[in-house]
Length: 522
Ligand code: ARG
Image 1 (tube, protein in one colour):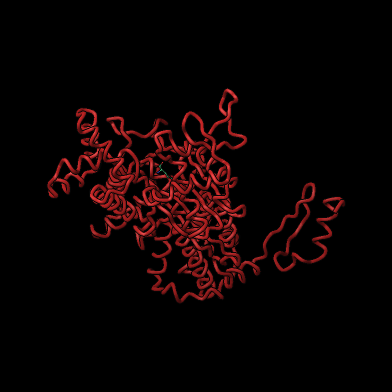
Image 2 (spheres, helix red, strand yellow):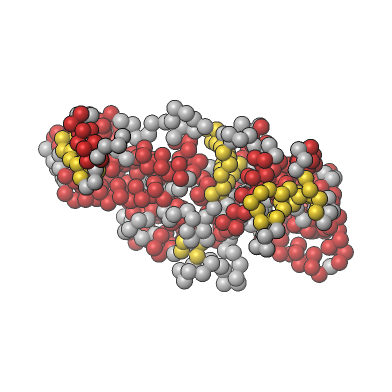
């Protein structure tokens, strides 16, 4: 507006538009406006404003997450994609978008030749069934056979070809293995309280029949270039260190297809059949180049309409307490199931100590929620793109920016209600009267939920929600130290119970955005 910012700020204040919000507005610095929200405004807003107002422009958003390669059991490398992706889908849903979860499992490729050959060798259904109970051992055994026995190796290679041509007998054996691994996977999802269901699985294999048409489409568009017998697509801007063009290979010289090719077919399905407005992918940072090329080719060759947004969201690694990649003693990636078990054992110890007044079955239920919460929160509360340390001690501390601290605050509010014999559903929010500075500080935070949800969604980063919940809890604790609730006089008591109820709601819904559930008591 080409006016002095301080003068403009003063003009805005004088216009009175801020009068409803604030009794104390002043110009500061080069032209900032300091607004101290009015206690009456806060009281009315807390009585009438819902925690979340759903968007009036809902989008259809496909979220590709978890997506493990299922030849082996799920390990720690799948944790971040699973936890982060799930949290984003929860927040998108809460904000009113229509979310389609997709588990693009790696269920196709040469590894499955070994697996099929090994199942066939085992022969008896009973023996196969037993071996599949431990997928890790099973795959190690199959690989060993492959390395040691030439005949087995060639049977395994033939099996790959048979799979590619949909040979019914081979497919049936393969299916047996896929069923066993998805059962293992689903068990982990249930333990971790992840929303992915078997119906969300649409793995690489399900696009096998579409791959020739991907090549045809690229060919028809004039995008295919043959290089050393392989079919490639070149896109501007992708060059090697020596300056030469980096190709995206879509078909090898032996006719085999690649990860890229499957992803192109998958994109057609997501845009044409699932009608996506946006497609989000959550994988670790090693796949950044893959997705950059995929999106460039997809847009150029019409695999996704220009208006569809394609986004890859990468994340850092999980480190041990010394800052090295987390490994088992044998140098392997720790299994997710083992990690969960460790966390639960640790949580049980803590809960037995802190909640000795409860029955053992209650302690176990709490320990489960605390363990899962701690694992997820440690991951989600860091900026997604950084590495983080997996340290059970810190993750489960009842102090600091941790899940148990937030869960505990929620349980504490429940305990206040229980002690006062109060039905939390029956609390009249109209009675909220913000007066004390500690009430004021808490209220200002409570009214930020929507803004924080929107920011977390926009940046696809859950740590904003985590930081908000932590800050809220710190201010609730201060409020509870400074202000009597149950012993206050009647109207003040009712008002403060209202603030407790709104805090409990924000904690419960906020933690639910992270996939963390709250124990009723702790
Ligand atoms: N299966 C892959 C892996 O474990 C991740 C798949 C991600 N999704 C995709 N559409 N490429 O690395």
